[in-house]
Amino acid sequence: MLAGALTAVPAVLCPVPAQASQTTIHNADPSVIRVGGTYISAESSGGGIAVREASSPGGLGAAASHKVWSDTKGRGEVWAPEIVVDGGRYYIYFTSGTGSAHRMYVISSATADSGYGAETELALPDDKWAIDGTMFTFNGQRWFVWSGWAGDTNVEQNLYVARMSSPTTPTGARYIISQPRESWERVVGNPYINEAPAAIKDPDGQLHIVYSANGSWSDQYCMADLRLRSGGDPTYVWDWYKSNGCLFGSHAATMMPGWDPTLYVDGPGSHSFVLLDGDIGTSPPAGPKFPLMFTAVPKGTPYSWSNRYWFTGSFCWWGNTTYTRANVPGATSNSGWGLKFFE
Image (cartoon, rainbow, N blue to C red; front, top):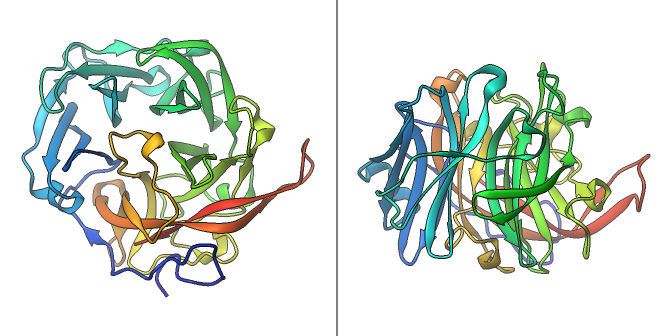
């Protein structure tokens, strides 16, 4: 069966799609949005950031790559740029630095593929190591979600959220919403990993943060879901319910019951939901399937960072999905929409 093939009776039937398409983009960490009929992507490129535009997600690989920012200050590695639109302006959030100095930065422009100014470091609360951050708006409030350390040492990567008073200004405290403490997200460690978070709203308006677990240096890399309970507080960790396993991965042993491993790729993760204007307010309602881009290594190819490509895939909302937990405050189970991912 295809990854995510039908194994239960859902509230909305997911069709079995064709095999996903490997793009010619030989890179990791896709970020893709749709503005009108144009698909716009951002990626790290040669010590900087490049943007592409195409009429379809699959067309991005053949599209011209426009360098929009270069690391002229020698900040270090440039990772996981995320492009969003706010108030008609484009913002690209990205990680730069080396070792424990990795921090989040932002650039902005009135146009997608040019005109970006100098980078600004985001003043995230507690000023700790931070990667893979992006902004979204939920219930009228801007939020920033990222992967970071609790302290100053590389023990584990947690997911945090903080409020934003503007697209470039975090405000208040940071709040932990996930730690890599489940057995299926501790198959590969040192450090244990929760990273690459992406927000989306389900057909009932509930907030989800889909993230990647296990080290990206391993084919155990996979995607899992955090679902905020109805009426929940995004800053309160126990209002979040975690899927009971990977929802998109290449190893049966770590998959949530009822979800199948991939057939054509290894280690899928670090994805993009390809939303209109990058806005979770435009998240797809219940329906058959929606576009997805993700990083993976083709099966049959040695798994390594250097062999990662962008893939086009799809996902659908899967109803009546129960996530369970134990030994924590609050209810031990929560039912609602889950996600099925297709290669």
